[in-house]
Length: 281
Length: 250
Image (cartoon, rainbow over the protein chains, first blue to last red):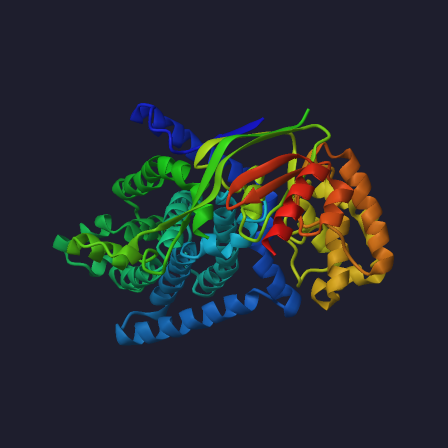
């Protein structure tokens, strides 16, 4: 049985309302997750269409990512006089990870308006469209990861057992992405000019985050910036595991804090707006 | 037992002007201390203090002018919208057929689209595959099912959507216009299937502009005017009142 009551009920104490909203947010995320068939089909739809229309499908995009990374690697290694065998694997890994993270944030801007026909066509957990967007980006990331493997093989870059830590690192990225995309997507659905701000911030973040430069380039007294910038934190835990670099415990704790602390703070927001955001579409 | 109950439901719908959809405008209006009336969100009362109850065997037709609140009512019962005030209680497996092609992908083949549409209807992949042959047979699309749906005519596309959609038997059905599909020959078959589906559905809510279709499928009617329930009751009685009012205006 399903019973829905009006939301303008202020007679309850605020703590109880907070708890109810938290539970609402949690059930929203769980319900969306349980729609895996729908978000799997929606999220893989883009890739399926690419494969349907051309031989090789998504791998054409992978190829273009590979070429961009290769050219940048060569140019950078010449400019900074770093051996290409050192530069290229680093740059390729960085760029592909960055594409994955920034792609999800960029797509979160339109995640609800783009899913309007689904969200208004039948009752469905609103987070379903968020999961489908993340899933699509993850599949593209897996395609691009082929470039990383190829480059590592070409330059015989050693990989240690630490590579298994890529799994928790990506999990933290994904957990963060779920709550952030929902909140950011809801805000951008309500305030349509916010999307431009998000895109500008992403562009700026690309330069202040060690994507094409190394954290060591930063002077010792400015290193704290790497902890203050969430992009840098996530880039470092993900990339560090691949490169057998020591990833500090501080980085892991900040990343976990953002992922799970953020999730906890986002739950009441998600609970409060999960149905109301259908009015904004 | 299925149940749809609305208790004093009011639904307010915010209408945002481009101004109020802008963060910049919001910031400047608070900084400036002057609130332009265009910044304010206009609130439309899409439904006002509506109460009624539907039980097993009730088939409700919604009548009213454009903008009277019919679509809002369908979305409210479906659970797409939440009431602002009041309570909506729904008991039973509900399906919304506002768009029977929901989830389908023009680039995918007919067979794949059966799976796609079925997933949106809540079927598992195994269930969808098991029902595929029967759906294929009903749709009469034959070899076309191997081709991308974008190559279909609009009629063929609707046939497939109808064939998949009607394989699921809900307890409560919410429809915007009567579901149906195709050319004259198929239409008859589609109507027969729709009728048998509706006969097994416990509660039906249908919004349609055709009073003939409404008389055919509904036994109750609700007349909405500007979000308010003007009249609710047996179909003949409500439709008579409604038609008298419409003629009175002319």
